[in-house]
Length: 89
Image 1 (cartoon, rainbow, N blue to C red):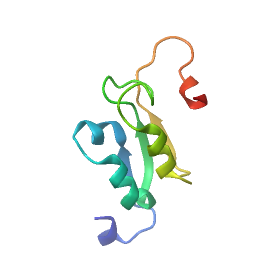
Image 2 (image 1 turned 60 degrees about the vertical axis):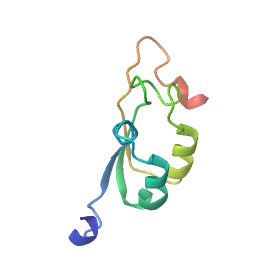
Image 3 (image 1 turned 90 degrees about the vertical axis):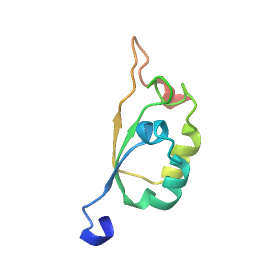
Image 4 (image 1 turned 120 degrees about the vertical axis):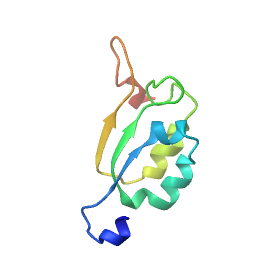
């Protein structure tokens, strides 16, 4: 669809949590489509926790996003202090 529209401002919203929950190959998607992503939403699977709290390979995911400079939506559930501590790990 993006190719058919042919406009630079049409991008993918990559909801990584839901892609993983539906059994999609998130790393494969990033290998082929990262250049088309305009917004990323993150949460870990299972449990919708912060990145690194579940089974998703977030170290590899963030590496594959490479020089991505778009918006990132944080969709994870976190209670208490330290909601962004995962960024330092």
